[in-house]
Amino acid sequence: MHRVLLPVDDSESRALAQADYVSSLPKSAEEVEAIILFVFTDDSEGDVPRSVTRVSSVRRAREHLEDAGVEVTILEDSLEAVDNIIRNAKEYDVDSIVLGGRKRSPAGKALFGSVTQKVILNTDRPVVVTGEDTSDE
Image (cartoon, rainbow, N blue to C red):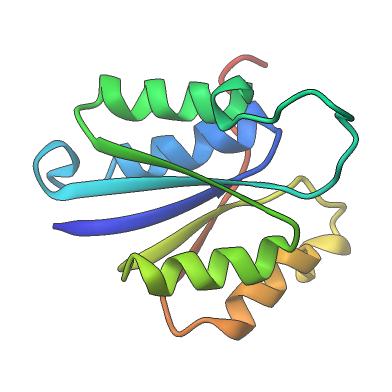
């Protein structure tokens, strides 16, 4: 079984691009397990209980993967995104990490975002950086 970690944020388009990449892997329905991780990074919701099932990007990525026959596990964590991504990658012994990239200016394309860059530099696992899903544009 090929285990892949998909740390998603609030962006549905990035989450769908990540899910699309995973579902396009060879024999994804038979041999891939996707672990979707959402990290709550602030307390802006006040007293409202936070739940990963309320996050639309997580729901959309899960639906896309399940429709493709990929086994899906959902995880949620809080506070520091990079530390949680690295820790969960080790804990679940994933074979790779699939991150969602953001649109950048031509000059900005030479650099990754801070979370992406820190994950790449601090993990011993292969990292794939996808773009955004632009199929609705």
